[in-house]
Image 1 (cartoon, rainbow, N blue to C red):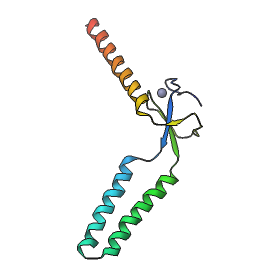
Image 2: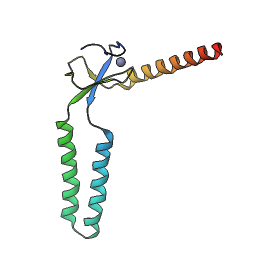
Image 3: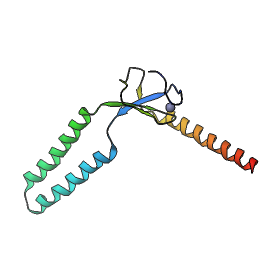
Image 4: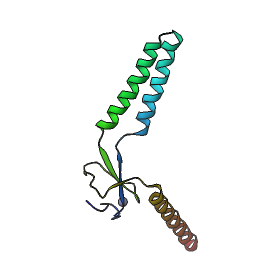
Length: 116
Ligand SMILES: [Zn+2]
């Protein structure tokens, strides 16, 4: 797979198929969970929770697979094994597509205004 099946774009990037909310939830739960034993002067338990959640986070990160994403339409391809040509996300390329999208929307709104 070299191009996006939806928009035909050939620039794709790979990223970890790891939802941000999950990482944040683990972090929040770990922080809140470690406050209580901290108040109760159970330092070892505080550390166990913090280190345990960090280790869990790391394991989860290793366990989840990669997902290939299209820069233009943000389509996600999970079944596709990322090959060497799929590079990690680059902000410069994403910015180029973001500006392309803005221009396209401007053109569409201009066309719409002319019609009305
Ligand atoms: Zn696409």
